[in-house]
Image (cartoon, rainbow, N blue to C red):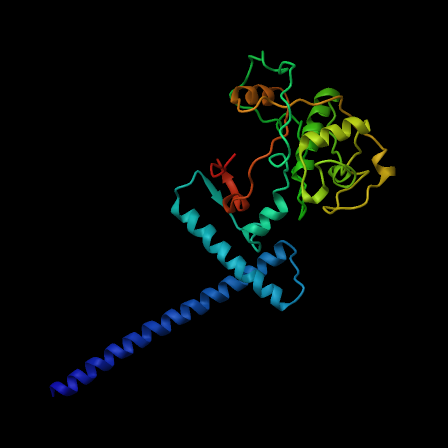
Length: 282
């Protein structure tokens, strides 16, 4: 009788183990199906089309890992910002950095410090906060695409702001002109550049075209000299904010939008959604 009971007991244990294994396997299958459905919806949302099934599968694996990391970090709740599954979710962080970190200022020779005083060094009316968007001085967010031209977008945004403050008219200027035509120095289109050289190019060129005149293609093209010659705004010069001075930075931002470069290479920045971002090296 005892032997029979033990046999039944072991059978029950075996059945329980098999049942648990089956449940886990079924759960994995459901999770995989749910993730695949989410991936398909994401592809539609961001208009993603791949060359073949192999590329789609490769991107799906990257997508899964990114989604898991995003949701895990958000659940942890130990950051001052949130992440989200955005249009970069099928890219590795290495791919994201290659396409987005186009600032070459850290690689170019250090520029001599200006002997002239900083124009805003005596500014005392520095508000506790400043949002130039609310004052109608900043154009809507633009998308540089898969082109390392952040330097051009930063420079253009600063020039758009300066133009608005002078003329009271907010116009959208051409980043593509800088990408295509400003290529004789540090600036090399989608391969990166720096804002100082972009300002010098516009100054020497005696202006820059409207975005509607010289539209964005988010790729390196041959300079269109006809469109380049149609100037909508110009600058007489530019000035760097004194290095390592938060006070000078506050004084500058209080008076006009400025061009800045930050390290956007972290995976947290890749999927940043909202909040105060603190995970950076600059």
